[in-house]
Amino acid sequence: MFTTIFFVIIFGIIYYARKINKIPKETEHIPYVSTLSVVWAIMRGKPHDEIQDLIRKSSKGHDIFVNKLGPRTYINILNPDYAKDLLMQSEDIAPKFTYKSGNPMREFFGNGMIFSNGDLWRTYRNLANPIFNLALSPEMVGETIIDFFAFMQQNLNRPIDVFEVSQRITIEVLGKLAFGYKFGCLESEETPQIIKAYKFVIANVESVYRLIFPWINKLPTENNRKFHEASDEFNEFIYNIIETKRNEIKNNSANYTNNGHVDLLTSMLELSKQEGIHIDTKQLRDEMATFFVGGHDTTSLSLSTTFYYLAKYPEIQEKARAEVISILGNESVIPTSDQLKEMKYIYAIIKESLRIIPPVPMINLRILEEPIKIGPYIIPKNVLCTVNIWQIHHDPENWKNPKEYNPERFLKNEKRNPFSLIPFSTGPRNCIGQNFSLMEQRVVLSMMLLKYNWTLPENSINKDKLILAPHFLLRPVDLKLIFTERN
Image (cartoon, rainbow, N blue to C red):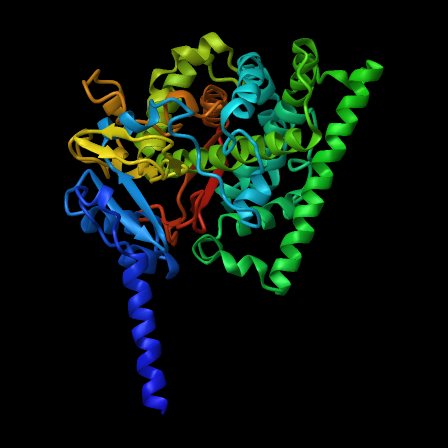
């Protein structure tokens, strides 16, 4: 009896596995690649570069392939020309995939710009575009770095977590930019409670296990209880800020601006009123949550990547410092927009950091509303598509020695595919904050170079390579650097 039950169960598993892994006839002409080894590596917590090497190996040289994960079919794109074919499509033809209610991604981001589609997306994108252009003020970032210098006085000459430090910088810049709010991350070593809550939420939102096994989210576990409590705390914080801003605008309060800077939230409320657009409070919360991630986590990784490679290669750090001194002098000052434009080598360093470690290695899923042509292939309707930015950024056909950190490659005017560098995606759904992020990184890096030298500790686990945790948003693992003040 037991033997019979055992074989029935095994037969059922095999039958179900074959059923869900059966490739639809519409995509049979596209190379198939199994993802089992990649999923297994992710679940074992392998570093992200090793996972990407495994993807490259398992793809067997194909620039596009189809795979199955559960009942869904996915098209994976590893080629810049194929990426162009998808990403330049109208947002109505290749909209973002909408996660089901209960999924952590859906619960956190809601209908913010990163996942919304159609008229809703167009309305808020059009509201935010001019606002982000007005926010390109190096002074606002520079003021935060001056506060950061005071914070660093007690952290010099000893190993410190550079990603955590970068997060403190970007969260304060974000507070000024998005909310006109000061979090206090540069006033003490203690992390503010709201930031602790946010970090706990985002750690669960990007959990690989929760994405692969969504039923985990419904289990009555202690972690799920804490997740919902932290989510409620974060939401309450955002809602309170929204209500405060509405009242300030209504009463023309003295807190209306922050030293002449009008924050994104205030600008959106004002502009929507001028345009006669009703902004729902929940929708505002979703947009602010999107800005929180885009303006905080991704830029923190980019800064950490640059700090790491400049520590690993002191000759690059010295060359970068020499350029900054030649433009700003040897005193600690806030650069102007015109001075930032002169920093060609600094910009090359930032682009190389974004190339070698793109903060978001995979573009959010697109679901096709009608068939499209990608390269020589016709991709049918209702198929999910994604672009692997990491693979495109490490493609040896476009990048010589792709694993080598070499900012000089951006100073040689080499001809390469314009879609071979897309850290902020491209097309109509590109990152709305990319210009601000690039400006922020240039200000931070130039001011830090004038103030400090930094090195890798001798016993660093990142001595040979930067180890990255395999999350939706990449994170360095135990990245510590030693900062010393320049004479």
